[in-house]
Length: 317
Ligand SMILES: Nc1ncnc2c1ncn2[C@@H]1O[C@H](COP(=O)(O)OP(=O)(O)OP(=O)(O)O)[C@@H](O)[C@H]1O
Image (cartoon, rainbow, N blue to C red; front, side):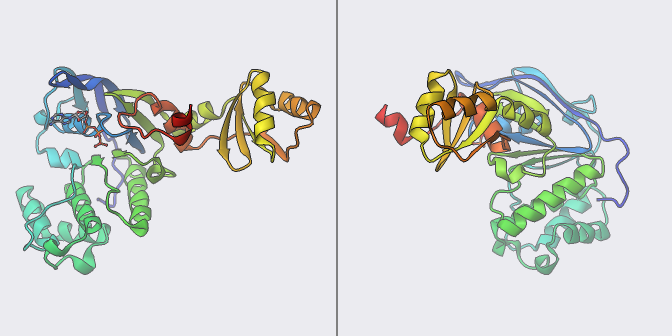
């Protein structure tokens, strides 16, 4: 990365992508925009179409319909694409006998970049202690860092990373979050996929939630959380069964969210207090519920999960 701020990074615009493998649609109208200066998290259950979309953005997969543009141009028409767009699709798989540094030098040479630049990115991704060791002995987390180093080698204003947290230990995850935030703070457009919402906590400012080949949501994180928190009340009670009965009778929808904790929607807090008081149901707390990113994700993707285990409650129904 340069020490300088990227002045005007281009947007990625994904518009109406459709693609079938046989009869099955992998992409079914996928559309969203990735803006500079913020990390855009691309989340969704397995098979939602995240990797396929990223491959289309990077000119590696053709579509039946739709278009993906970077700064108004398809990836394939960019001159020296690695200088415009850095990408990581799978963890780096360098020749096992070659060192991490050797691998990056080889990539740098192809892009007309210096050995000094290679040493800069090695420092940046924290690979300096192992950079001269054979990459065949690298852990998955180290190979991810090497892949990230390769992605940012050309100092690109746009960065597209597919599951960069895969195989990272907790320290690596914390490092990755900070790294992604710094890329965006420098003004870059950053698109990062993950199927674990928690990985993107405190990192993504914008979210594209994918399901069944389309974007189920394309909005700011604050906006999504506010939307999911609206009209929800958290209730603490030792009498969950009674409380559920009383509130459901009054038209509320009640979900158990933990031991002694219920989330109630469809009734305001003061009405809940009145109803519980009148029926002599004890409770210790009634408060506005603040949704987490996980809540947002689960609510949006409930219908779109391809392979979902049946819960014991569903079996007994
Ligand atoms: N090369 C392929 N041949 C056939 N089907 C494919 C191929 N690539 C993807 N698919 C199918 O397209 C759909 C979307 O897959 P994709 O890998 O893009 O999803 P994803 O959101 O990245 O999922 P994951 O989180 O599991 O990687 C899935 O149903 C997948 O089985």
